[in-house]
Amino acid sequence: MNVKAKANSRGLLTSAAAQKVYGSVGRSKQHPKGRWTNQECQFELETNSDLEWLPQELVVFEGGLYEQRMQVDLQPGASFLSAEVVRLGRTAAGETLGEGCWRSSLEICRETPNGRHWELVDRLELNSEVLQSLHGMAKQPVFGSFVWAAPDPLSSEVMKELLKSCRTDRANLDGSMACGGLNQGLVARYMGPSSQAARHWFTRLWARTRQLRKLSIPQPPREWPLQEDGTFSEETFTKTHQQHAASPH
Image (cartoon, rainbow, N blue to C red; front, side, top):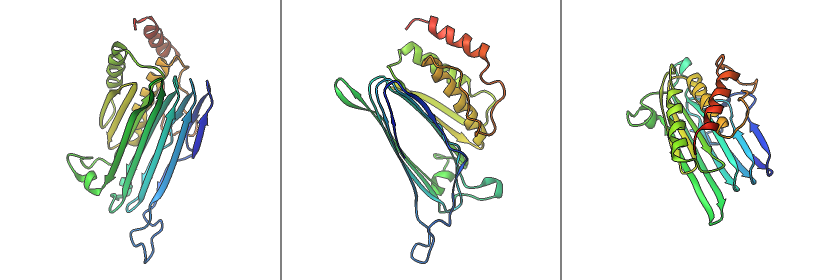
């Protein structure tokens, strides 16, 4: 997939349904373990453009092999947001990942007056060993990653308040959730039992970033299932937005 966002444009990309990677893909006598399913995404964002990449859940079946590579090139003032959730094995059916594996490579680079600057290089691999390890997924079947490359640098005070709000947004959700600041943005991780909890937390973070970008209340695509009720009330969003606008930078 190749996407080019023109200057000052704004867009949201999602998928029509959850993606499924089966363990039987490409399996034969020559390839008894199957072959990798690959996805490559190239995003080019021109000056002051805004792109949100919010696909639905990816399910890697037992024995499934999946690798994705994402390259994001940003011009000054461009904003890129990504939220992805992957389930390792069909746990509801008693499956584990088996000999399956999920790999991801995300590279975000921005043009600056001083040349190209790498904002994030994030490479991950989740297999059965990592899934079972206490220092890995600790037997939790759902992993999520949220990344926001902000259009402009955030002051230390704004970043502090953003992280505080994001951590508060973990309330009443199952799983382990952590977030931290980038040089110009935010990264958050989810690890736990629930795709729904991951999606709810990321949707709350999505709302926070839109407030900082002075955009309207998030409108989750109608294709998305399992949305929270009342997450984005006009009153709550406007109040928080006004508080941010009035705060010193």
